[in-house]
Image: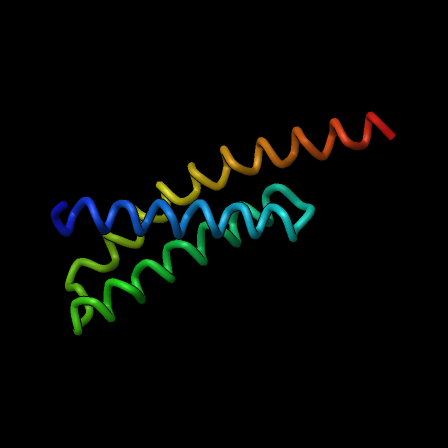
Length: 92
């Protein structure tokens, strides 16, 4: 496994964990999606900074790209949470 694959796995884990946590704790779909996106992108950049020992010169482009990916992941996970909440309200 090379560093690129490992970075992708770490980023995926961060995004999924952040999305699940924010959608579980925050009732608003859009607020939870935005919070999850921001937390995921910043946390991944901080981890990359710690790993490299210096700030990547292209970190702005990395933030934009990782934010787009994190937003997509969070939106999909949030859709499942929203669907589950609506089913639970209908059952009551």
